[in-house]
Amino acid sequence: MPRSILLAAALGLLASPAFAQAPAPTLSADPKVRCEQLMAYWLRHGGARGEGSTGTGMALKSAAVDCEAGRYEAGIRTMEELLRRNGYTVPKS
Image (tube, rainbow, N blue to C red):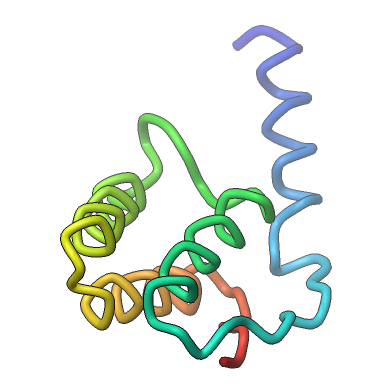
């Protein structure tokens, strides 16, 4: 395995929520806005992406589809579960 890949993997571990986690911000109580904010929070804080991310990409896509279709509660529920499953504190509304 090339050294650059090993270095990137090591840096990814150091940035994971298990090593350091800032307190979760308070997000909007409006379901549409909260849905968007949870997805942005996931992406901003380095949520697993790409191939081999153990299904997180599908959960993120599912939440995005739900939010875009106006099924905010389903999208929020999916995002909150995804955050918890990956060691993040779910931001309060």
